[in-house]
Image 1: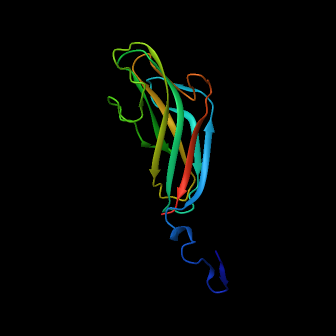
Image 2: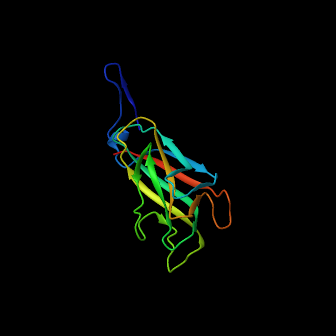
Image 3: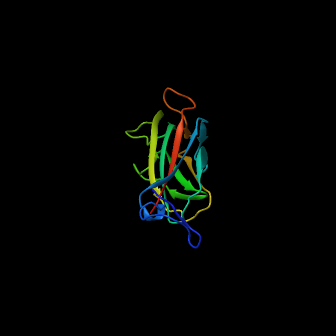
Length: 173
């Protein structure tokens, strides 16, 4: 790639090397991790400590979000379940469908189970269009539904304080 400098026009780039002229190129990657175990009951959404921030280079860029988050749901009744949601700053952008076996609904007590501890990993992929060049924070929140039920994140069947990861990729469009 060559850069052309001239006193009247500033810096120009040859076709295809300017990020805005090269759609689908990854411009930057940010990763966040946490091992802090967090808990939530059915009293509302609670931050899970999994978070990362990115400052897009262009307002036309998209942000591709990848999440890997281990969890444990302590089920206390056959109608209990839990969910994780993704937020951009303070706005929920990927919300679980709290319905029978909806997306990102975790630990549904099926088959008449009345007491159980269910371990799993929630993986999310989301392509966001924040339309900004300001610092933007992505995070997950957790919530349990059902009396006496809890959800814990950053925990697995064999590891307390398991690692959760969020990766943010700025994609030129």
